[in-house]
Image 1: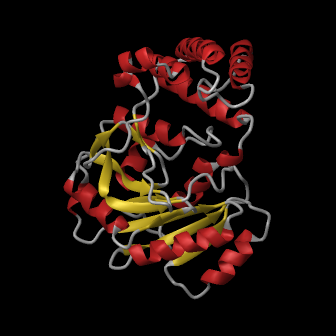
Image 2 (image 1 turned 120 degrees about the vertical axis):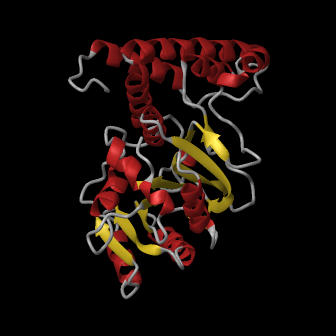
Length: 328
């Protein structure tokens, strides 16, 4: 880890990146909120259209014409969340310089007027922190859980079983951390409102584009930790988040294949193929416990349709297939 040379910068620059995929109207609302939150901060806003193909790029470009702090670009290929954000990060600021900080904002997230400034001030005051994320609420005022522990074999078992004695025994390994009452260090944060020192990007690289969607923030925070950087939750930075609009997660029936791909990739990267196999066996074991309980208590929450079968089939395919990419 470096000495966080930007931490003492008197006038740091921030590049805000907003990724759009077929949510033009909502993206424009997020951009307007970001413009207000960027007042008094040097930098710019880059909107990346992730090859929406529905006229989003043209409509956002037309709506932002003349707004000098906003640039709209086309990714040319929908490579997922990380790849799309990487397009904006690689471009840097409009004058060609690199920003001191990159701020990732979801297209369905709307920062309070001081939300970006609070994250910036926090990172400047905490030189060991390489990433910082906001306190997220829904439009109904409900807290969103965005703070997590890194996944492990134990968390896979606990999260799948969702059974009182097991969850109590493994509470210290459960992935969700709830919503902390105060700002401080966590393992990883959801990427709806996430500020990153550019120094961290220089050291560990951008988002891994092998993740199409999900686990890319987990991987980024883990790589930052391995390089000596901390990730912090900042309670005072407030952002409204609708959630799952562009991903369609709320409308999921069966879990899509890319979720299983991302999960497997993360587990292999963090511990090797053997770790991924053991973690998957733990998840299957926990899932079977839950299904046994549901025979007695059918009102218990169930997994999505065919989830355990799909998880097992995906793991078997990965085990049988020799991949050239060691993280696949």
